[in-house]
Amino acid sequence: MRFDEAYSGKVFIMSRATGEEADAVIYGMPMDWTVSFRPGSRFGPNRIREASIGLEEYSPYLDRHLEDVSYHDAGDLLLPFGNAARSLDIIEDYTDELMEKGKFPLGMGGEHLVSWPVIQSVYKKYPDLAVIHIDAHADLREEYEGEVLSHSTPIRKTCELIGAENVYSFGIRSGMREEFQYAAESGMHMYKYEVLEPLQKVLPNLAGRPVYVTIDIDVLDPAYAPGTGTAEAGGISSKELLAAIHAIAGSELNIVGADLVEVAPAYDHSEKTQIAAGKLLREMLLGFVQ
Ligand SMILES: [Mn+2]
Image 1 (tube, helix red, strand yellow):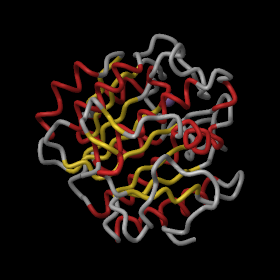
Image 2 (tube, protein in one colour):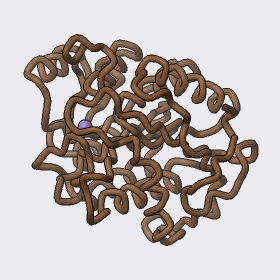
Image 3 (cartoon, protein in one colour):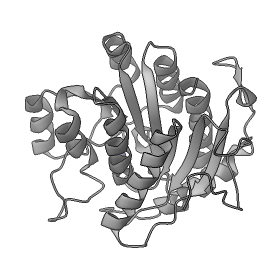
Image 4 (cartoon, protein in one colour):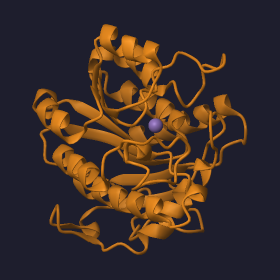
């Protein structure tokens, strides 16, 4: 599939430019086959697109309008159900093409493992890459029930690839003791429970660096985002997560890609999870893409 091959269904609000013209490409990675608890995030991207239609196109936070950003919603990648290894290969090939063409990748999950091939691809172009990871879960396992391709491993893999000292996790409130030990001993930067305050302290240190931002919707308290596979009580508010995105957008970072993962619409009949996700994605587009 070509990177700009238009999917004939729903698209994110105001997607206009063709893939060739666009500075940024939005794409869905509808994979949820390695999750440990509740599946369903493969239906996330299209529900976020639906919810986006109800959004204003103007952001008062950033004083920017969606027509100021040239982006293309390429639809969902076609992934072979149940085959994690091939799905990850397809995602990496696709992102390689985006990087080669100088497009900003803005991905929608899917489970969090989809970020792993994207980070590998972005790292090939930016060897001094840093990663900002906002999530309830450490995602630092080496394997899960013997599977190294698991939604609880992507940040561990990222630490091993780009150097743990280049990985910054925020909002973490769940994981095995071993994951927290790894965080403490590996040199990675893990900030538990809070997001905005530690982020504001860290951002000046990352000035000028190429940074990939991966956001798991479950960093939000289940009160704000019940529609996710592994909901975890004790999270932050949607107001704080928006403020975190704006803090990143207003910093001196060179943001080179981003994703928003783990929206699983079936667990939220009120649809507030996907409505929040649509707004978060709008702010990521307006704040991260020049
Ligand atoms: Mn998570």
